[in-house]
Image 1: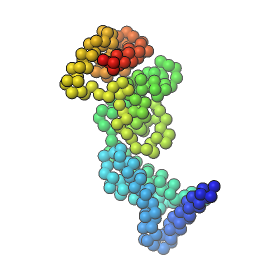
Image 2 (image 1 turned 135 degrees about the vertical axis):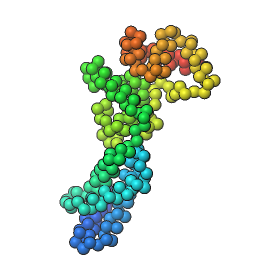
Image 3 (image 1 turned 180 degrees about the horizontal axis):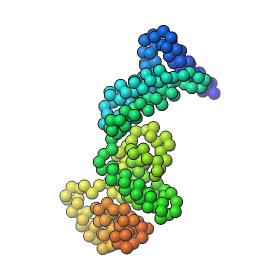
Image 4 (image 1 turned 120 degrees about the vertical axis):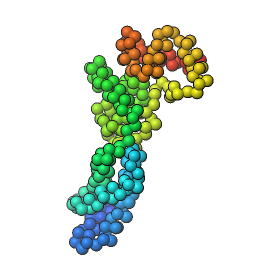
Length: 251
C-alpha cells in the first residue's frame, strides 16, 4: 500500500512539475522550461518513435524529429486540470502526430505478399460467417486459410483492421511479421534433395490426399476452394489435410 502511494505521489508531482514548466514558458517565454520538458519526456518520445519505426520504412531518427514536433504541440495545447496528466496527454498527441506523418507519406510497411494474404483472410472470414451464421472464431479462419492464429492477428494489426479480430491493446506492441506462417508447414522452398524426398513421400499418399495436398499447399487454395474443386465439404478437406500431414511426418 505504501509503495502504491509513493508511485501515485510521484506521478502527481510529475504532473504538477510539467504543468508548472508549461505555465512558466507561457508567461515568460523561458526556453529552459521547454528544454526541461523535452528532457523529462525523452523516454516517451523514444518509445513511440521506436515502436513505429519497427513497422515502417521511416528511419528512427526521422521519427524522433516527428515525435518532438508532436511533443511541442502537446505543450502548446495542454490545459492543466485535475487528473489530466501531461504525460498521458502528450502520449496521445505524439502518437497521433507520428501516425499522421506515416499516413501522409504512405510509408507504413505492407509487404507485397501481405496484400494477397490480407484479401484471402478477409474473404475467408466473410465466407465462413455466411456459412456458419455467426462470426467465425480466429482458429476457424486460421484453419481455413492455413495461417497460424497469431499470424492472422499480426496481419490485421498491419492493416489496422478490426473486422476479423479485436485489436484492443494489440497495436500498442510492434508487428511481428515472422508470426505470419503456415499452420501445417513452414515452407516448400526446400533444397533439391529434400524436395525429391518430399515428392517421393507424397507419392505414397492416396490419390485424393495428393490432390488435396497439391491444391492446398502448392496452389495455395483455401479449404473451401479445394472442396469446391474436388466436390468435397470443407470439413472433409480439413480431415484430409490433417491425415496427409500426419502421414508425411511419419515417413
